[in-house]
Image (tube, rainbow over all chains, first blue to last red; front, side):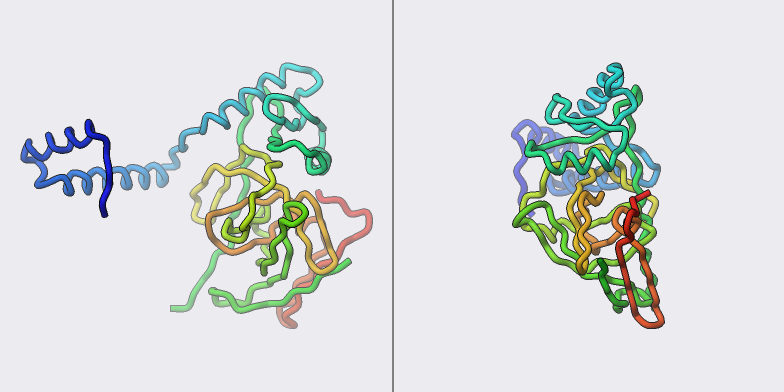
Length: 131
Length: 134
């Protein structure tokens, strides 16, 4: 598997090889990739939260701001960019109206002082097979 | 309005209730698939490989999916229309996953009367007048 890495990074790899700790460049990359995969696996097993994407951070921040407005506080809101295009106490009613609108994208969320992701369970299907 | 499916052999040791559905994201953006009737799932779930077109971006972008193995992943909810037989329901909360099988979860099933009779291999869904999803 061939790969390209920046010159500066390649020099660091060569330095590690020159130090004698690693036999060659391939071994450095193998060890690095293994460490990355193991750290991700242990993070998943330990329930560590993945980083929140900037887009979602901005969305939650906007929901917090809207919660300061009596028109939107503790209501479902539909946002096109930063603009509120609709709001409703009932989530499903709001979705029905949003689907009829032409703008895209439209993001739906609950305006509250402490926005959190809704948790959705996809606990099945669990498949049992005979051995 | 009603839809009928059947029990089909899957990968597991027991037959699975399945239904042929259409999943639509607007005019000209509809696909058909055989989906598993799954009352254990909060929402419907479809593999991304089903959709050869751009999905409408009317969405709830900040949700977390708890999977069967206890792990969880950040995701977003989309709202396609789902048709089955002569039933058509709009705005069905659904998630798109990298893989897996199409699943009809409670976001769709809770709008209907659902009757599963495994001994006769029957899957029967029908609308109820005046019923609204809880």
